[in-house]
Length: 315
Image 1 (tube, helix red, strand yellow):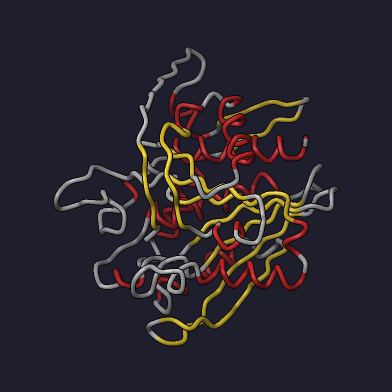
Image 2 (cartoon, rainbow, N blue to C red):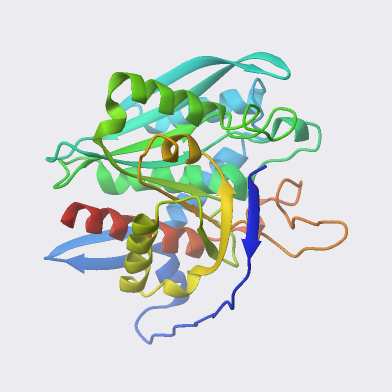
């Protein structure tokens, strides 16, 4: 569970219609042209990758589904510069072996832009067939599809590293010691070896497949980087999906924030209808399934992230 506080604002929903572009086409490939080069993020493919991960079943650490998801990630990046960061974490359930995955796409500049997510599901929910379609699978699918845009060329700006964190979820109950295992480990490792000094921006995506997309402005993130994301969303015509509300989220960006890395957590925590039976909506319930997420939401976030990277490289 991510820990959060929330201050709601007015959400403005803007429906955009066009004669030449249908809603389905927009979901499949939201295109943008800059200086003659066509950049597109395909949300439909990201959605399919999310489905593939959900098909592994529950992905709590040590489960067959967790191994399935790891093997799926390795297969997707078999021809890329893939690094497996394996470590042992001390948890309330004992020592657990966890695996972060880092995929590196080199750029012409010396800096690094990190785009991160987590891929495992909640350990305490291991007996309810919780598959985390939005919470873990949607963002993993987004990162896998992001590689389709990045690979095969030397990037004009900074290198882009995709990071798939393990152990984001609490093993027993959320606390600073029982959560964020993968990100805490990697932040400390990169602090020791000097990698953190090269990171220009850390973009975390979490729970962004929600059909009713409403990404709040996170008060634990770096203000100037959130402003850049806001600018990117406006340039893409998607500002209605971003920052109508504010909150403060404890998520995989915190170990990096605490070490001075500029970070932005893009998360839609308000997921599904809230009721007596579902006080947190679909979050951390067996209702977090593929029918609750959409290719369109993945397209919106994917295209905004691409534009944010473009703006970072102009700084």
